Amino acid sequence: MILVARNEEKLLAAKKSIQESADIDVKKFAVDLQDMDAIEKFYGEVSSLDIDIVINNAGLALGKASFEDYDFKDFEGMIDTNIKGFLKVAQLAMPHLKKHKGHIVNLSSIAGVEAYEGGSVYCASKAFVKMISRNLRIDLAGTGVRVTDIAPGAVETDFSNTRFKGDTAVAESVYKGYAPLQPEDIADCIAFAVSRPVHVNIDYMLVMPTAQASATRLVKN
Image (cartoon, rainbow, N blue to C red; front, top):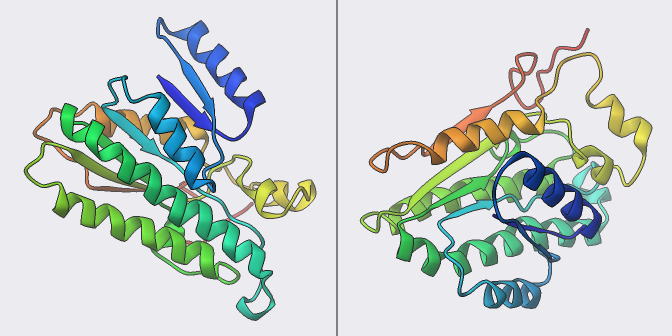
């Protein structure tokens, strides 16, 4: 298993946790997915490894303001990660996946299906992921490579803490009053998709908490 993320400390913790629970070799690489050269360097370092499944989870939300009031640097950060980084990871994975008739799982979002107030570029970037996933299905037809787009609703992660730039109170309020999805819930969906027989492709999966009926319809007690 190859783990790729920016945060070295979290990579170490994830590697330790996985190796304690499973008999598997884990390699980790600290890579900023906004850095195209760093992504290319990473793929160079793993060129001799057999890569048959790629979980393309590059995703970043920064801020939540009206379009005209948004910090343009936040726009650029989301575009660099959610679009450019996402594309680079997927494109450089293709030779590996074609060789092994592998599987790429792209993580989009309910935000790529429905716009919401203050979402603007984040929503647009996730719609981009959704459309690229559809195009990949078409372009890769006949190669044996499978493509899955998983679109989560509200998942309790560091997502909101990052979006609100460390404002813990605001971030925590996003998940109060209902039972949000947990990372393990999405991991279960990924495991299901990649473990289907080779003649089965799960194209798209929209997964939300029971309390959430749309991007904006979320019932809190």
